Structures are given as structure tokens and as C-alpha cells.
Image (cartoon, rainbow over all chains, first blue to last red; front, top):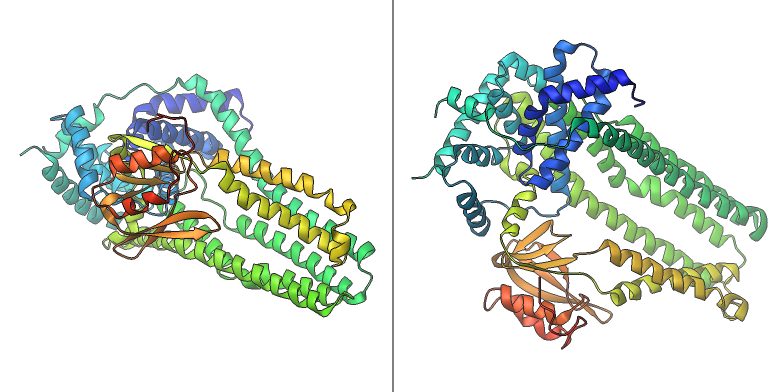
Length: 173
Length: 380
């Protein structure tokens, strides 16, 4: 892309308006801050590349989520494919290590529980929950993900149930 | 917590400041240039490899080999090389990634198509990548006026190399591409039908960073592969290239091959082997890490927990011993052992971090006493 000042202005405007949304997606898909920074930069790069294809500004919000979530899913997959085996986080050692980290950093932080629960979801479930938390309607979710509008409600309902039970497991007894 | 509270909590969370957007413009421009260069370089590399083969066999055709049958073989090799280059570039161009603004489902579909195409390429590697040039090589070799033993030896070498490349490709396909294809199919199926996901398929999509988060909590001692181990293999490869090159140049006359005029070329090949080994060592920093959690391989991206390892078996190649780490499921992972640098540190790390009576401890005796590192150097 050979950028013009108008493109640069459009890019900066879009990024500044949606900075927090992008950062929240990075937190959902990348666990540590180094990965979050990498993912943030990768999402911005994909926005930069795809911006000339965005003609109508009223669709910018949905478009941006598509770019961000696609990039994040691909980022997670690439990281996973670098390893021949991924350790399952259910393993006792790892769970203990992660729990001890959580208890050190955020003893009763509901947000930390929410993130931990979201982290245990699958990539598409994460996408749906993120869109739900960002206040998307079912139609907007269908438009952003490409999932049939009739299925969005069913899938989201199941995902919310799963999230809720995960959060219950994590909350202090 | 109800849904509205959850949304409020989510939307009002405090987030750290990323780099300023203005700075990002120049980063984006640099990344765009880099990406374009990478894509161009990939095509150029393939076309260059094709050009090198065409030039070499073109020279053979016009100068070295005058026999008509050999020339037919050279022509087959040149034709096959052009076909291979076309097939690689064509497959890549017919399965482009989805545009950045595509829906998630479309994006996954594009990725699935690309993975399927790659998997098909590897699956059929025998027919489009191996057999055509091998036929050319065999025709060229059997058309030469050399003795029968040399012809048979060459034929066996070609078949052996083909078998190895075929095995390597099928291994990569079954270990990497087929599981990835299944995962993507499973995700798409979930999105399209709403039916529950197959958990075994998507388990691999969970980020490795999670295991690394756990690993962050523990002390880790890291080791890289010793230069001498890489050099042994590097030199065998490079001196082997000299050997076969000279064998071809002297038309299989071993006595002429060892004349000073040809022997002098062994020096640059030997130095090339050292340079190659040095570069390889630079790229394999952190080959193995040992921590209280387990053994970290592939620059720390593959963690095998201590209690997952049910059996440890040595594997000896030349004078180098590696270890097979075997899990209960029978899955085997190879770990460099006697070839790692700083044996005394490695010993100390295993003694400090591996559980008592762990099978890996039985293999500590294979390590040299004293090691290569500075005395008293402690694991990080």
C-alpha cells in the first residue's frame, strides 16, 4: 500500500477511536504483555493493509472487529503451530502455577476471573463473547463473524453458559 | 454478576497505553515494505533455484555430456524443474488468504483451502516433485558411458534420496497439516451448524503462551547445541557435496578425483561447512531448557512436564547421544543430550529440577565430567 496523507489520517482516526476495543481483543487472545504488544501491532498492520478496501465509514466498526478477530485467531494458531505439542492447561502443575500467579496479582479481581474464563474458551467462542461484551446485536455479530444469524443466538447462549460455569469455578469460595 | 454488570466491567476496564498512533504510521510503512520484500523474495528464491538447475543441466547438455540419451535426461530434468516452480507458485496464487476485512468464517475457509492445497501438494509429492526429475537423472546417468557399478550406485543413491524426501514430506503432512486441517474444519463446522466443537481438535489452538505463563514462574536453565556437534554433520554434508561434485566432474574416475587440482577445492567446502554450522548454532539458541516444570524444547515453545515423561531411552548417532522422551501414550520427542554445551551445568540443572527417581537421571552418566562451561558457572 502506497499511503497518502488522507489514508494516514483515516488510519489514525480509526485507530484512535477504537484503541481500547483493539486492546481488549488483544487481552482476550494473548495472555502475556509481550504477546499482546505483538498482536496489537499485527492488528494495526492488517487494518493498515485493508483500509483502502473500506469504502463506507458506517461499516467501519464491524469491519474493524472482523480484522481484529481474524488476525487474533490467526495469531493464536501460528503460535500454537510453532510447537509440536501444546501442554493442556488442565494439567495440575500448570494450573497451580497460573493460579498462584493470579492470586499474587489480583486476589479478588472479577475482571481477572472474566479474562481467565474467556481464555479457556475456544477461538470462535472468544469472538462471540467479545462481541457480546462490546454490546453488539445478534445481527451485527452475524455480520462480523459470517455465522448464520439464526445460529448466533444458539451459539452465544451456549457460550455464555460455559463462561458462567467457568467463572463460578474461578470465583473464591 | 448479571450481564449488564459484566458488560460494564468489561468496557470500563483500564488498559495500558500502547505506542502512539503517529509513531505507528512509520512502523506500518516499514512492515508493508518488509512484507512485500518477503513475498517477492520467496518467489525470487524459487525461480532462482529453478534457474540454477536449468543452468547446470543446460551446461551438461551443451558441454559435458554428448551422449544423446543423457541429453534427453537433461531435458527431462530441466522440464521437471520448470514444472515444479510453476506448480508451487500456481498453488500459492490460487489459494490466497482472505482479505483483512473478510468475515471470520470466510477467513477460516480461505485458510482451510490453503492448508488443503498444501496438504495435497505434500501428499502427492511423489508424482510432481520426485518422480519427474528422478526419471531425468536416471535417463541421464544410464545414458552415460560409465561403468555399470557407477550406474547402479547412482540409481540407488537417487532412490534413497527420493525415499527420504518422501518420508520427510509425509511426516510433515501428518504431524502439521492434517491436524491443522481437522481443527479448521471443526471450527467451521461449529460456526456453520452450531454443533459442539470436537475438543480434541481445538485443544491445539489454545495458545502456547499459557504453558509459557506457567514456565515464567519457575527457574529455567537454558542450553544450546554445541558447535562441534553441528560441525560434524555440517562437514559431512559439505565435504559430501565436494565428493559427489568431483565424482561427476571427473566422470567417476576416483584416481583423478584425488589429484591436487581437485583436492584443493575441499578447502572452501570445508570452510563452508564451518560457516554453515556456525550460522545454525546461532539460530538454535536456547535449544533446551530445564526447569522445575519440565523440559522446554523448540526455544521454549514446547514444554514436556516431568511427570508426563514415562520412559527415557538414548539414541546414538555417531558419538552423539540424544534422548527419546517417551510419554504414556507412546508419543516420542527427541532431546539433544550429550551434544549440549556446558555439561556440568546441565547435570546440575537436572539434579536440581528433575523429581527424584526420574528416568532422565539414569542418563546423567553419559555426560562428560566437568563440561565445557567456565568452572563454577551456575544455571540461570
